[in-house]
Length: 322
Ligand code: ADP
Ligand code: MG
Image 1 (cartoon, protein in one colour):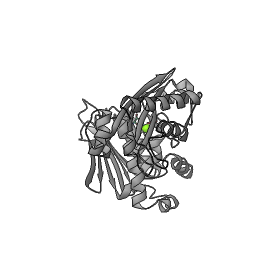
Image 2 (spheres, rainbow, N blue to C red; image 1 turned 45 degrees about the vertical axis):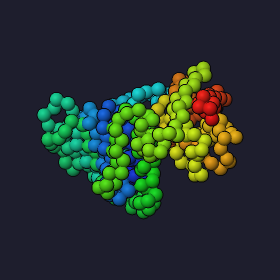
Image 3 (spheres, rainbow, N blue to C red; image 1 turned 180 degrees about the vertical axis):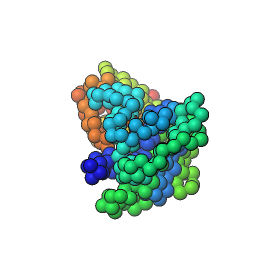
Image 4 (cartoon, rainbow, N blue to C red; image 1 turned 60 degrees about the vertical axis):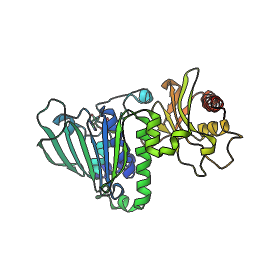
């Protein structure tokens, strides 16, 4: 059973960045107003997420470690319609199977919180503790008990790049929540709660301020909102290009093409415009792959999706006389 557990866990938690994504999304789901992410050695030694969200009772905290024990029970169809990111109750159980996990949590109004320490799915400690309202979850020595996985991890540089990517995606999708990132005791991001444009500037740099062009468009059942960078601001390397569908980050070369097409004649080939675009769509019009680590989706009406993205960007550029 412990092997089965480890295998299942490897599906959800493939590398430090996947644990980071799951923990950050849990804090968002818990209605946190500020979320602090601490990583040591690119998450290989420590990943800790501290939030000021609604916390858990001792029973909830213990339950949260059981596979499929989600407090957000949903059907897969409404995955893209729901407010919360989590739905399968696998993330914490998976991390607990392949790391040393420590949960500290307290709900508003409780005098004492709880601490639970788990190693390889075994509860080592559970007791009351004085702590702040909210939740702190530490994932220590990820894959310490799965050497094959541990050895498979890439260099700190590569793993950290993946972590920052996940951090950026969650931060962009939730500008009304404050976030900070601490790498080996150095604060590398501090993002105050604010508007999307401010979030972009705090994440990517002051020079983005003058480069953002607002987009907004809707056709039929598809709405789009966000920013593109001005054509002169396009980079020689791909990277800062973000699509979110119903607030979930997705990759879509098809929609990316729609943006590039809208920039036709304005940017040279082999250059990549900046964009952060949010698509809202009735979830019955999308087919989602419910695998937790997949970021692809299918639209039942791809042409309309393409058209609305292209139109939004074209229109925005035209309005700014670009
Ligand atoms: P899911 O998010 O799919 O429900 P997880 O394994 O990520 O599954 O989390 C299990 C449960 O633990 C959640 O449903 C939630 O009740 C609780 N939980 C996890 N993280 C937090 C947090 N930061 N604050 C409050 N509750 C949390
Ligand atoms: Mg979750």
